Length: 399
Image 1: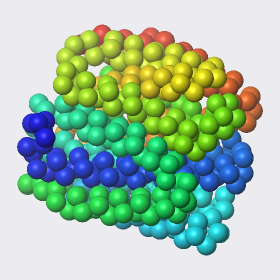
Image 2 (image 1 turned 90 degrees about the vertical axis):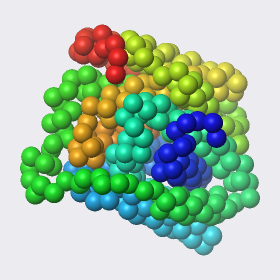
Image 3 (image 1 turned 180 degrees about the vertical axis):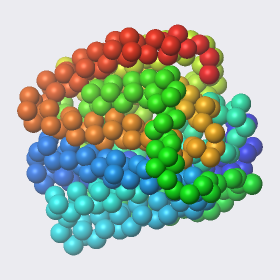
Image 4 (image 1 turned 135 degrees about the horizontal axis):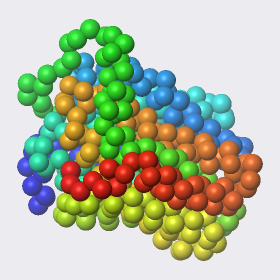
């Protein structure tokens, strides 16, 4: 490995733990979506899977921030992975015994959402402790590159292995969760202070207050929230694969992987050439291109064009992700990172899982293609509104 960041032993294990976890999750979710659509043939139920994973994050926001700031983040992360391992075991049993129903899938999705509710802010708060502050933007891009590689491989691998049976995919996912737990156990931290102040209303809402008082951070995460919330079409990919592009599970896996291909290419580029100036203008421009690419995907009936459009959405979304995460982490003291990351995770979760629910609902009302067209136009409108609402973010030059 030539990347100097891998000289930091704990970052190396953190990196591989994220890859293993992401790979397992992506493989599981492509099969869960295919099983749900096979059971109900309903866009609404595909959206419900996303909502079921998002709601625990919303309910537990104030709790997970406190946990991430008050306890050993390595242990919290390990227990989150144990929870996802248990969820994969339920999916294995339900598939093998034939009792995996719509309701069972939604219950497992809630359990996965609860585990991820604790995992995401803990993971975000842990990362900055593993490298020097000056190397953090590059570390975020490098970590994102590994994660995106897993997102590329995971759905495609899950789609191909599905031919051998859904239970085979779930078993492999369980093995990857166990591997990730092993990697986390090797992460070492030195003299990291934790919060000892009593739990109070002030401490519970400290993360929200912190973000509200920093308008550029608020603007960055708000832009990402509403743009991806409206522009996301991941929940509808089974319908596109089956009814519009006429490809099977393998095609669905490739479609789900396409955004990650673009994101991986961009994250590798940013790992070598970090953004050093005009970060605000770059972020707004990238989100606008994301919306245009989503519109192209919505209207496409060509599998190849759809793949290219989805790759572009991933590529330009990654620019926004790196800028947002860098702004949040570099401006947040360590003892606050758990609570701030918990709030940030809600924005991320809302844009992804709640975005899937929004896509399913609008598709059931207006149809699949009109739903994605409306969302893409909504994304472009969000860019214009946020540029007006957060002028200092537009003019922000350097981190």
